[in-house]
Length: 397
Image (cartoon, rainbow, N blue to C red; front, side, top):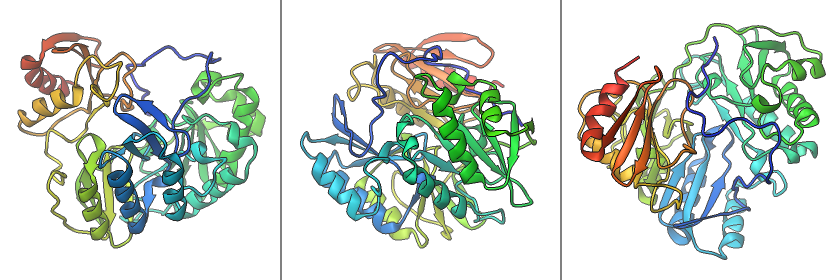
């Protein structure tokens, strides 16, 4: 298995950054055109029902009434008023969502969202141990807010997310450790402890880099520092869980990862064993067979499946278009299943784009877009032409 990296990079990789890491957190708010933004780290995407209710209440009373999931399974609040940071921190702390003030932004951990629900191994032990180790490590505080750990139960879903350090469960209870985009991995016994050691070793060689792929593209420096001998990666399917029913769970899709507080309250009410926010803008409800919430999806054949978009205008000043409105109009006008994942971007940064193969739809003006395919071919379209052109591109492999 060699999960393919993103084909459309927003900028060349750089080994040394010329500015500080401004990635937002729950304590460090980001000022956007639609108000302040807070990013709440949710390791493994795991939320108890009362935590989901608390986030929805905070969105209603402090923000724009919406919650937004990210490509790392975290949750964002937008439209926050200036000066609400202290109250938000108090609410998150009371809900158990801010266990460490010093390590808030480094708790970026994704995990296979169906782990332990459909007959495969669970990842709760790994997740708890890694999160605890991270919070206890003084050195880990220096990690960028973009540094990502991935825990994969062996199915290969999170292994394709371009994480900085990936742990892949082995049938014998051990793990494979893969740094960045390395084409190899090394066997380790205590996966979470090995991942922390690798993260601390990365800091020693980072020289200003934020991501492993920038400082150690093939993983050789980290393997050497840890005294590990790498071997081939196993073949893994690498598929994300589609919306709809699965053994032991229901996967519910959110339009561009965004849903209103009332929808989140209803999700939390339906959650018997908590919720699992996925990196694919969906939510897993363990033990739930069906739920009907207006505006949320459970049909895997919808053209909305695999469709994502950046914030766009008017929330982002850099965006050339209201990409979410344009994308929604195009998707609603399309019939049949979606095909390849597709991402709409308002500018060249392509914030939130997926990993692996995807169709790139880039705004070039208020009413025009450039559609790029994996083959390298591009098409310039207007809004009126976009729906059909995107549908054709998604069917092209």
